[in-house]
Image (tube, rainbow, N blue to C red):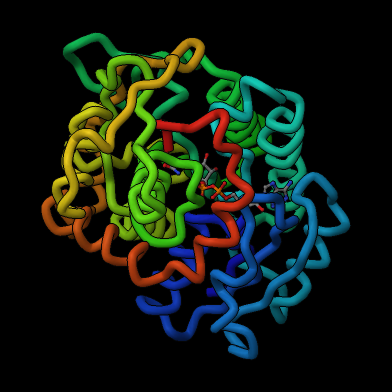
Length: 334
Ligand SMILES: NC(=O)c1ccc[n+]([C@@H]2O[C@H](COP(=O)([O-])OP(=O)(O)OC[C@H]3O[C@@H](n4cnc5c(N)ncnc54)[C@H](O)[C@@H]3O)[C@@H](O)[C@H]2O)c1
């Protein structure tokens, strides 16, 4: 297969490229990425010159850029996978306009391209479109959409466009909605890489409020294997939740990280809570497990120490990015 994939200089897209080329060494990928602050060409630098991987610097909002990126694949792509997004909730509170532009208008452009070519479209979405949970319950694919942040509202808008293109134009579209990811190559503004790199720099881990917000954590490679399955075997028009049944509150993650790194809890500090901070997210992934046979490979007990080790061994990758992270607004969210 030849696939046009967007936003692969970011965290999950880059891991997806590596995953696909490992599982399907004969596939070809064209990556369109505009290289925002979160896009780092160094992440996939080692693939330069690999005939299976093409990079095009361009904006998914721009139909000409999307066409040019697609034209790097001989005969054009067989499918589009959309990772490109503004993804940081804190930024969406400060500057929502760019979230609407990239996440909604960019999706609109990509849907137009997939419709024109008559090819499959996969939208990488998030559990945040469901809003927040109380102490109990899980998000299923039938949970009503109730986004609370400008980020999640823009992702919901995109999901609804995908649905409309499927219903109105018969587009072969699939949506995946995943919980919080962790793993290598995550921008150090998000909780786990921020915490690990802060500890390495002799700083503290900033935890919002009392650290009681709960997230359901999944290793990025397990997310990528779920997306690939949905792309290859998912039913058109269907939504697939992806999650690891791995709920942790932020303070316990911070405690676990200081423990793994052999430090004390004095290296954790509480900071003013984020506006409208959702209390709890938790995914019911029964559909993708039973219909597509997806199973996660990692647990936190293997994935978290491995991830800490990756940041310890790859200071050269994160150090230049960390300089850009605004330390006045530390994030405890992904
Ligand atoms: N990180 C998570 O935990 C998580 C969980 C569930 C879903 N998601 C979704 O997965 C996707 C990828 O998330 P991520 O964490 O890798 O994000 P990221 O911020 O690390 O990467 C986003 C990438 O998109 C690129 N990009 C942004 N605007 C663009 C534009 N207009 N045109 C082209 N490229 C553009 C950036 O340069 C960057 O390389 C997003 O759609 C996000 O909503 C993320």
